[in-house]
Structure formats: structure tokens, C-alpha cells
Image 1 (spheres, helix red, strand yellow):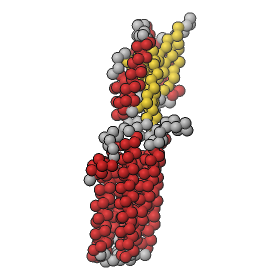
Image 2: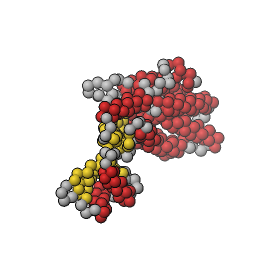
Image 3: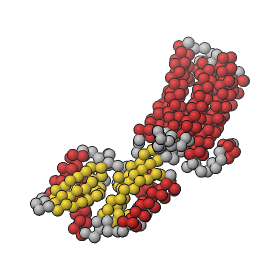
Image 4: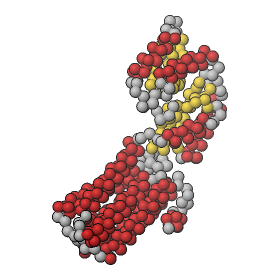
Length: 389
């Protein structure tokens, strides 16, 4: 059913890197969510009032709010497909993140209201009037929400959408909540013990936990969290595969929404090579990155002297020094400036964020070790932090 709907309503559904295709996935998910949740709301609100169940009424309100979440998702995808303009030169892709945030906030509101209703029902218990229509509506709701969960998880995975994955998590919460309501209704009917309020409180805590988790997952890319290591490694492997590339460092990736990533990187190549040929390789790297993985990459050329034995020996010496301090440290951009009384060794040292040594202490340690080898060496060090060395 899921794949059939996608094939029918999403043109070129396999071209998920295309913002228009992504938007089509989002719109389809939004429409499915609105229709299904309105139907569930209407059925549950009638059954909830007839059976005097606060949990079923709360579940009905939950479905109504889910319809509102689907509208938010629909608007978010519609706005995210807008092309870049003068005010937003990097596009509008982050509207997807805002849509996911809106859904997460609604999930939290639902959790709070369900918790309050559950506490009220615990303090004022009343046996639920169980009936066949009540059980049928809840069972159909569970089945439909299971399908919606699978639908949004599949679509969200295809286009790597936090908004659709949040919608999938919301449907999962609904399955748990409705199952709890059904179990409590059957239990209360058979044993005459009211569990409606307790079930409502338990489910509300789960929903709140899920909502705050989605908020965190959504805030991270908006704040500029580091890309995952696999993505960084794939970029590094690709760049190092080009002829003449000796190394790379200072890779910085900016996320402006799914399929809208911009990056800059320093690429080391031999200083003695023809500058036209070097520039041609850099052009190829930038073009290929955009065409193959949709990354807008700017490459900065760092010339490395490869035919000067003394410079190469100094580079290896400094590399040995920094790795003795910490194996994760690397250096780049070494320049040797000879003077009459001393020699300046100018270079950058890349330190991971996890290292326990402060930048100032690290500089002192490197300087001390280098001077221990030759007192005429004076280190001029810049400490770098980046996504990849």
C-alpha cells in the first residue's frame, strides 16, 4: 500500500535528492495524515463520550492534534521547496526542521494534557462502559496507526526527513496509547477495577519522553551539529582519490536543510606542479561533489613543498612531536622562515574537540618538545578544530 501510493502520487520517486521530489513525499505524508487522523478523531470522540472514558477522549484529541501536525508538515515541505532568493541565498530547506519542531511541541503538549487528564481520572475513578463498537474502533485505530507509522518511517527513510520520522514516532506513540486504552477498558470491564487514569499517566510519560527526544534531534542540525563520521569519511576518501592530492584538512560542513549542504576544505597539493593543472583538479573535485552527492564544496589549495628535503624532515619531526603528545593530533600548512638567530616554524595543529588539553597548554607542550630538539627553533602555532583532519 505504501509503495503503491508513492508510485502513484510522487513523480520520479527514486530521485530523492531533488527538492521537488522531497516536497512531494512530504505533501503525500501530510495529506495521508490529515485524512486518517480526522477519521479517527470523529470515531473516537463519539465512542469516548458514550463510554465516559477520559483516556479515549484524550486519544481522540490526540488524533485531532495529529491532523494539525500533518498540516504543519505539509506547510513545512511546501515552504522548503522554495528556491534560494536574495534574502535566503542558501534556500529554505530548514523549514523541514521547523516542521519537525512544531510536531515535537504538539507531542509534548499532548503528553502534558494526557498526564493531567490521567491524574484527574485517578482522583475521580469511574468504570468505563465497554462495548463492541468501542473495541472495534480502538482496534481499527491501532491497525491504521501501525500502517501510518510504517508509511512515514519508509518515506522519511527514503528522503532522510526528520519531519516524517517525527511523524512516524508520533504514530508509534498513538499505537501504544490506544493499545493501553483498549487493555484498560477490557480489564476494567472484566474485573471492575478502573485503570483508565493510570494507563493515561503511563502513556503520557512515554509520549513526553518521545517528544523531548524529537526536540533534541531537531535542534541539533539547526544549531549546526557535526556531520556523522561516515559522511565525513566518504568526502575524505573521495577527495584523496584525485591525482596529485597529498592530503586534506579543515573540512567544515554547513547544513541548510536536507539536500542543501555547503562545505569548505583545504586540499594539499605539490607546490611545484603546474598551477593550471592543479586548478583543473580542484575544479573537478568541486563539480563532482555537487553532481554525485549534492554537496556545494569550496576547495582551498594549500601548496606543499615536496622537493625540499630539509622542509620535509622538519615536517616529520613536528608530526612525531605532536603524536607523542596525543595520537589524534596532526599538523598542516608548515612554513619554514629562516633567520640569523633562529628559525620560525609556522604551522597549524588540528586537535579534536574531545582532547583534554587546553589550546594554550598544547602550544606550550609542542614548543617545549621542539626546542628540546633544537633551541633555535621557534614555533608559531595555530590550533585548529574541524570536522575532519
